[in-house]
Image 1 (cartoon, one colour):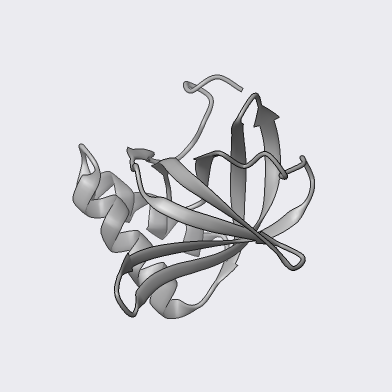
Image 2 (cartoon, rainbow, N blue to C red):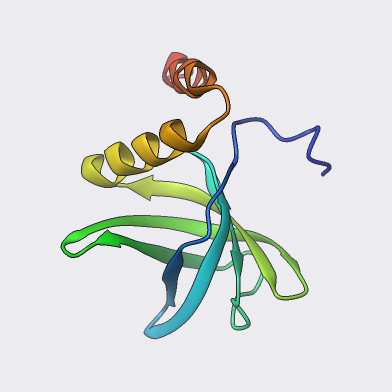
Length: 118
């Protein structure tokens, strides 16, 4: 899939994070984020199709926690598709993407399109 085929605003985001797969914790770094997924580097134990949990600490006591699936591996990079998160994590993620987007209004429009599907 080329970047032109992707839907959704992706923002550059270089955060230290970690991924849990079963009971294994792997430090990773985010390279970009969207409301629907993330590109991670350093995820050597990740395999395509595996369910994992991404923990993204923003500050002491504040973190985004997302359950998802690794959908693509290329070298040291893993693309994660988000499947589930609690309301607080979603609020932080939405705010993080909106604040870093070139067009913040587009992020809100994307969110409305997601809700219209339900």
